Length: 246
Image (cartoon, rainbow, N blue to C red; front, side):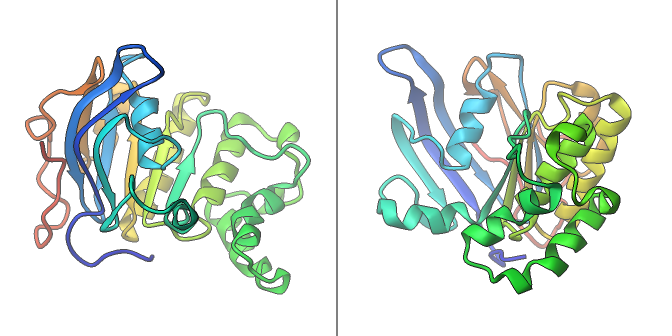
C-alpha cells in the first residue's frame, strides 16, 4: 500500500458545507484521521454522512474551513493536481455504480486503464483481486446478472485495485442481507490489516461491534458529536497516534 509512515492522512479544521443559500449541512467539523486505522462514521439518516464522505473523496469542496489530505491543502490545490490526489482514495458507493456493459473483470480493471496501465499488465492484478473478493467464477459476468452482494464485491475490488491509501465506503451494506454485510465487512477488515485507512459510513449500529478495533465518529445534524469521547477502543497500533480528534 502507498501510505505515509507517520502522522495524519486527513485533517479537517472548522469545515462547513452548505448547498446554495440553504443552511449548512455540515458545521464546524474538526478531526484527524491517521494511517492504518478503521473508522465507522455513524448517524441518523440526514445527519450528513454522505456529504462528509464527498468531502473526503474530493467530490465536493467545503464552503469554509481547511482540509488537508496527505499533507497537501486539498482546497487550494491546483485543479490539475486533484486527479493524482484522488487516485490515492478508493470509493465504494451504496448503489455500486458499476458500468452496465462491462464485465466484472473490466469494471475492476477500469481504474488501472484510466491510470494508463498496459493491457498485458492487467490480467494478474485484476484476477487476483476478483479471487480476493470470491468472484473468480464470475469474471465475465455483467452487473445485471450479479446479485447485490456480488455487485458490491466487484465495487470493492474496483475501489482497491489501485492500492489506495484510504478507502471510503458509503453505506456499503445497505443493499445486502445481514450475512453478506458481515462478509463485506471482513473484506474491509482484511484491507485495513494491510495498512489502508478505512472509513465506513453506516446507520446499522449492529455492525459497529463487528470490528473491535474500530474507532467511532458520530454525526448529529451536521456536527461531529464528541468524536474523541466516542472512541470505544484503544488505538490499533500503539506506536502510532491514532484516532479522530476534535
